[in-house]
Length: 497
Image 1 (cartoon, rainbow, N blue to C red):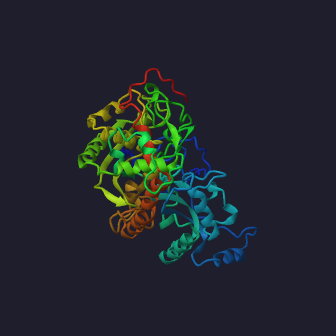
Image 2: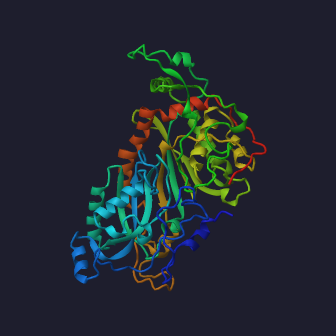
Image 3: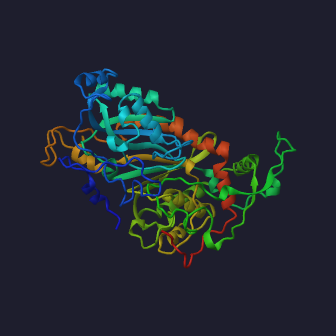
């Protein structure tokens, strides 16, 4: 059964002398990720601070030389939590994987370059006890991500500032570290995380109701275009097939094996016909057509009511891949869902959908929003969502991942036990804790200020630029409008594990 929020405190690492197994850095992509109740990230702890001589030598003089490389370095490793954000475009997700660009790969290389991780430990996540709070997949962003590891960095506040400056100077502009917080020695960021907040930027034209302009009309060149440009060919349109990635913190080995829970189609009840593949100018015309008239505000209000149906504890097996209806891990708890008022980003009107819950499965948020958009734009009763929250198996559309971002990771119970949430002058439990640690909180003013600036100046423009450059939303809408909805119940579907 899904773990309840009140029980999450029991998973927080206690500051005792017991050493836990370190977290592998190269977890295969098919294994459960952060957020899964039975996740593979058992712990990132390796116990007390360690003294490390320079490579190839165990002498004290060599250690002294190592500390002189930078003013923030320390001969002892201490465990830290890095709070950071990134734009996921151009990366194959957060988790390090061989032969592809990932966020963790760039982050580790920067830490090695500034000597916070010794070169002899480079590429070995075991040795530094690397852990991650929530894994994002290909193309997904974050403004509230947390990873933890042991670093050769002095915990003095002034030296930590120098460390952050050096680290950000080595990172690409689309990755920013907001803060570095020292934690208890066997801190595990995944297990200590009590909840996660996500946000999705949805262009309001996605709520436009069909039928749309005919292909013949959209094939006519617009003013200023080259009339000789041929806009179609005979290749099948792959826009219906969403590429892998999304909000999920859980990977299933049978991903994509079930027609009822993968892709954007309507499963067994819809014919698998495809339109001709269109050139980008076709979707540009289609977007301009959708933007001709503003979306009625009643449509946005309907979207709010639809999204509210997801609140609470439900069976979300239809909103991930190859998950049986009777699988206890499909039961998830969502605490809060809101839809903000429209705003303009890169000349496109968008609404922000905010979702807060304990943990999420692979593609869950993208499928929730994709289904809610279909209900809202087709002006169906919001209670239509309820049929997707039963044990019946139904296909669900998956909206593009480019608009999704991890907004914050929550550490309610850790902060209550060890952080500044503890009353002044008290020591929680008789655990031998001799010092108070800073709370890990993205709402701390100096962290929130940096995260908001990164969100507004980097992440949001990048999200909408993907629509202007690659038509990610218009392709989804154009294809989805030709499919039947609501989707029918799938009978006798064979699950593959």
